[in-house]
Length: 373
Image 1 (cartoon, rainbow, N blue to C red):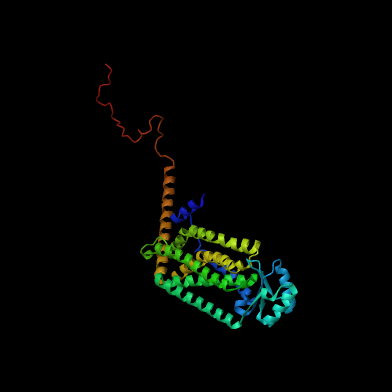
Image 2 (cartoon, helix red, strand yellow):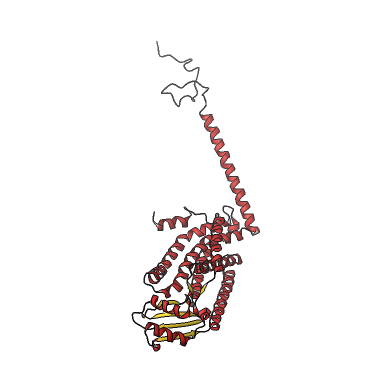
């Protein structure tokens, strides 16, 4: 069966996956993932030099390898903390944390002598901790403003319950992505922050699409008694399921190429800053919009008095229909038993079927000539 046929059957309600009804399972999975992410956060993030301050040395020397540059830099600073990457121009980029407290002039002189390069071929750039703190503060401010605007928009466009569910899904995605960064040990740079904000926008977009379908399916739902809000919401989720999967797969393909091919095979480490955030965030966003946001919305909505009354009417109707169906089956069984019982009448000879119930005159022939002379 093709994916297109499955999508059509999901949209028509011929096939349905009970995501909302199994919300406890999804909540448990999310709790475990978030707990692991929290452990990673407790271990600490590997902040880039833009946030914690330090010095960046770009060395231009053909043939200089990253391993040779790192070995030399570690000997100069006396620790194994130097971060070395190669650039797309063939240069070597050495990052030294501000905690090492080695003057830039001293490092440049010793490094140039060790690798045999002129000092003017080493470009030194010093980043103070105050600049990194300012960047961190602005990033946090932007994140808070984004969350507030999202909540206000969702509350106006939909309702406050949808706003709460969407906000929980966004925080869910953010915690998972940051936790993975901490566990993997990737460096957090301004590019990473851009990736964080990008995935939050994507996650919100996917959630809004699902909520819009749920809103259409539940419009005027209290005027009927055939299905509850949770069932209608689950149907809307199934209607957009294939679309969500297709969108996520298409979005993950180029990101996977950046992460595994560009950053992994080709060694372009600078691509990892944003590609890992996008990869984890896109996957978590698709999961949260399906398994977290919509089930949470249905749970919050079912607490409303009108939805409780609707659930009660639906249960009563189904109980009545089940009782009527059971009584109908009982009457059918009694009818079959009656029809299949022994016949008290005379046996009907062959060839006389259908004539048994016809009236028979006992005086047939009286007063009539017999035809014999």
